[in-house]
Structure formats: structure tokens, C-alpha cells
Image (cartoon, rainbow, N blue to C red; front, top):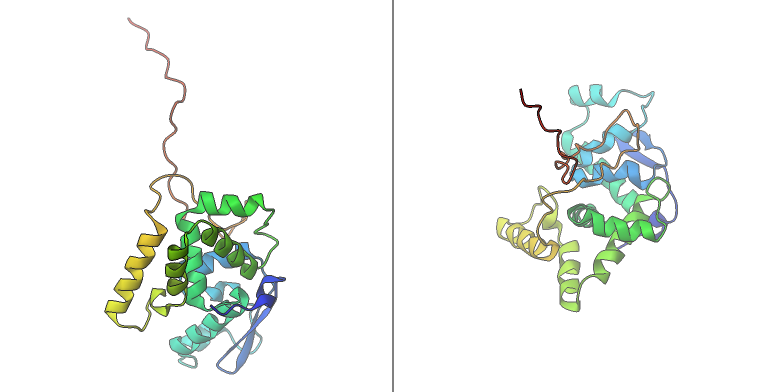
Length: 216
């Protein structure tokens, strides 16, 4: 698994060249990049791009000046630069973290990690470390194979049989998806731009019973 150490050292700005025009993503912390990564859709990086005086990106797409494939490739490269690893590798790590968020994030924050201050590459390093610590040697080998397998990426170009096998291996390794509990949204408190849709909260158990009705 190829990893760029610089991606984990600080929050960097990223220049994205699309159709001959350079757009910029400002230095953002892991909390801003995380929802883009968990979506599995590179197109969501558009929300993070600064506008360019050379032309509105939406207009250039509508006019056919930029193709969807060209845009997706450029935005995927931006994610990989910030994550410090291939897109599919970062996506699998983020998915694992989401499936077992209380345990994985709990271990990370206990070590002093701050999602609003650290770069995305460092967050993925932390997730990888926690997950590997909880696996035996055989499971570690399976995880490494999954992280190196682009078929895990949504829309992967490998054969259907390869994608199905990779998905089965991932499900066996990740374990059952949690059925209850709050899930972090990845957006700062009070933000006007929510990043992910929160799951409904379970009904409160063990609360005070309603007062008995007065008999006539």
C-alpha cells in the first residue's frame, strides 16, 4: 500500500486542473474532507473548490467544455493527494471506520486526535492503526489485500466476479453493521452546510413513566 507521508503532516491546499483551468481547494482538516471520502463520489469535491475568475465550473460543464470523466479524474487526484493514498484505499478505511465508529473513533480521540485540526492523511493513518491492532495475522493479510484492490471502489472497472469476492471479503472482515446508535456526521457543530444525513436516534429507554390518569 503506497502512502505519502506529507499528506499526514499538515493540512495542505490542493490545486486541481480542470480543462486547462486551475482551481484550488484551501487547506482543510479531516472533518471537512471526511464526508467527501465516505460518499465514495469524487464529484463532491466540487463543494470544496474555490471559484475561479476564468469561468464558472458549472457553466463549463453545461456547455460541454469539460466532460464528466475529465472532471471526475481531476477530483479523484485531488482526494488522493490529500489522503496520501489511492482513492479506493482511503474509501475502504473510511467505510470501516463508519461501520465501527464508536470503537474506532473512541480509540483515536483517546490518543488526542483532533478531527478539526489534523489532515485527512493523519486521520486515515489513525484508522488504519486501530483496525490493524484489532486483527489477527490472517485478518491483517485479508485487509491488506482489500486495501490494494480497486474493485472495492464504487464503479470499479474490474470483473463482476472480482467485485463480488472483494465485497464478500470486506463484509466478513468488517463484521455486521451496527443497528443502533448515533453516527457522527463529520460536520462542525452549528454548521449551516451539513455534510451527511444523520440517522434517526433510538427511542430513549428507562425514562420516567407518565403520571397516572386521574379517575373520574
